[in-house]
Each structure stands twice: as C-alpha cells, then as structure tokens.
Length: 131
Picture (spheres, one colour):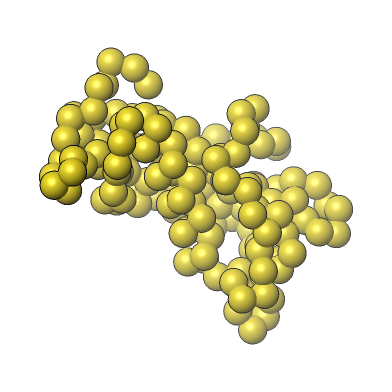
C-alpha cells in the first residue's frame, strides 16, 4: 500500500467528523466505525466505475495505523485498483486532520472488493477495458 506523508492528490470520496457516539470509553473511535466509512467511500467509487449498484463482498486487507480521536476530521480517499469480470477492488486510505492542529496523518488503509449487481441482485459484468 502507499506509504506517503501526504494524502492522495485527488479529492476524498467522503469526509466527516468523528463524534462522541463513535468512540469507546477512552475516547478512541471504534475501528468498526472507521471500517464503515471506508466501505461507504469504496462503494461510492465502485458504483461510479460499475455504472450501477454494487455490494461489498470482501475486505482483503485492513490496517489500523493510528487511533482516531473524537473531533478529528476523517477523510477517506478511494481509488479503483482492480477490475474483474463482475468485481471491482478499491484501495482506501483514511487520513485525519487533528482538531489540535497537528496536521494530516494516515490512520487506516485497506482494500475492499465489490460485485456489480443487476436489478435482480445477481452479479453482472463490468466493463474491464479501463481502470
């Protein structure tokens, strides 16, 4: 996965603020909440690439690097990294901007895989001629 000191050059798929309801009793944000934000970001990018509905089928990797705190701005950057016959894999990096002004920090990264589905919720082909 990318090892950079700054976020990707493209716009984040989603951006939100970590709130008290998303934290444990110590003030750290639950990993499951971060994972759900990543799934929203990856699903959005996969939807655009598939030109239609997609469903999450796998999380191939997920690495939590640094805890996220209440009040942190959370940005999820997602890009398509692989297209199969019916599937799309996305690399998602989560970056925070600390409320205390510590700058941006990569906190989580992972690869999520989605399958394009039709109106009957059955897998459908994706045009794999472009990434």
